[in-house]
Structures are given as C-alpha cells and as structure tokens.
Length: 57
Image: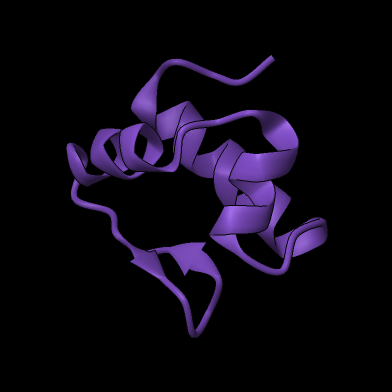
C-alpha cells in the first residue's frame, strides 16, 4: 500500500527509487502511480525530484 501522508510517501518513494527503480517514470509505471500527482504532493512539502540522484530532495 502506498502511503497517503506526504512525509511517509517521501520515505517510501525514495526507498523504492534507491532499491528497485532506475527512474521516477519506472516507479510510477510499475506501481500504477500518476507521476504528476506524486510530484505535486511531494512539492507540497518542498521536495522535488532530482534525476541525477534519482531521489526527491
């Protein structure tokens, strides 16, 4: 289950990106997540995706 709380979501997504996925697109495709919604939710707590490090920072 994907967390709804933005802080828990951040931890979940960064762990998934680190351990299993080479990109945000791959994570979203595999987990059935909408990239735009995910990015907006994490932006609400001042985190943005960084392609170079493959994580939200």
